Length: 479
Ligand SMILES: *Cc1c(COP(=O)(O)O)cnc(C)c1O
Image (cartoon, rainbow, N blue to C red; front, side, top):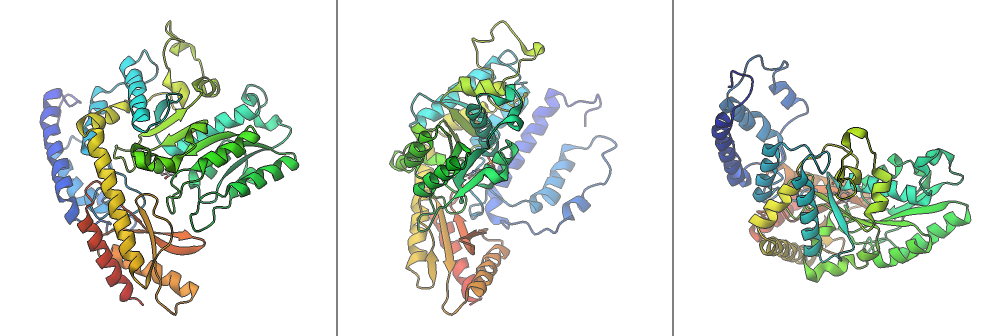
């Protein structure tokens, strides 16, 4: 398109309108597309040229390829009958904020490089804190994801437990091993963070989280910590989960905090999924005790609806965090150091996007009241579905419906455990193969079940009724 090697603002204006129209059209028709892509591995790669473009293409050619190559090869996360994984709503209001961020093209290296990037982030983190009913003891930043937040938390925990071993010989010179605890229902990113932070898999304890609720058993945690101390190890950190990946269980944070406190262990709360519940006063009790933690992470890019890479990380002691994460290269020093927040020292990357804009846009364009109403709609829909499923003699709801996730199994009489597993996977796949809804199977207590994660922005009760019909058809054809 451009002949001087760059798109000028007037060309951008017209191409931008075309692309915004295309996005709006996509969102309007997404409910009529098959939720799950029908592609085989390598299909997309084969549809793409093996060599880079020689000359400039027109936007219309790229949009045509979006339609023919890209759209058919994605799971439509924004589809009203997408119940897979977790709700990852990219609200259009936050899409606009993300576009503004890209358009400004700001370089977030330091406060000086874009004071507004830092100070808007301070402001929206504090707004979100207030909306969540957290005390003003918390200071927040926006990270890319909960996995990073957990890694950062476990690094800080490690340094607290070793009085800053990184300033000496590191973990390699510690006399006794440090241990980390989480529920066996915790997200895989917790184990990954523990390994990357150098604790070693021998020192990670997966604490029992028994049925019926699947939340961490605090007595088992206390026993595991005591046994480690007995054997000369040092409990350094506990990660409590608020909204587990399998069943959206909430670990008892207050009890866990008390036990962690006995050992001086750091407490991180992984509320990646469940944090959104804090927006609803009537659900805040699920995170009771969160004020006792050292840090908490919550992904508004899940159910709340912000574009991905909006993961709030709140700490009680920013100085401790900065003490671990800060570097001080000469080219970044300035006269205002000490008077401003330098978010590069609150996480791992140096250059940061203007992430706060998506939060700002969504909160201002949608407004908290509408967001809360949507969340309450989803809670009501999930509990209504659970009642329907639970009332059917051959179906079982396997875990308490704490938020918007309903875990189910079709259990016709006479199937042994292995046959039941095969049946579960088969009916789930049959539902997905219709293209009319999308569900993910997962293991619970070693057996397959199916998770229905309600909460895509456009999902209404009609969509759940349709899903329930599809489920019954798929299951009875197969029993
Ligand atoms: C989604 C999720 C994660 C992972 O979050 P990312 O932001 O994708 O890294 C971690 N823990 C829990 C409980 C989650 O729900």
